[in-house]
Length: 138
Image (cartoon, rainbow, N blue to C red; front, side, top):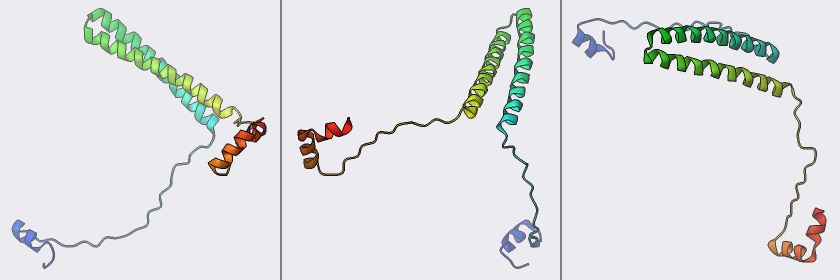
């Protein structure tokens, strides 16, 4: 076969064939996403509660093992597990705060006082000397 791979075929003492690429259209269905924050909140909250309870059971077990064995590594693992459970409880509180922020109406500033002077510095100096600029701000 005379192609780009002829030297490679000769070196490896093999014969290759070029296989044509078939382009079939594949229909890909994306998973449905929920735009319901309340549903997502309840799911996340349930998952965090589950993780906290399982973590607490694990902490109880590792503390028992650490006390029986007296091994420093067991106490280190217990400390890491306690920190992990504490972090998960913090995430639960953060979730509460984020949900509260989502439910709260967005408030913007009620009064916006933006003054803009268009002119040269000489004109600005004159206005300041005359006191016109100060009376406009009040």
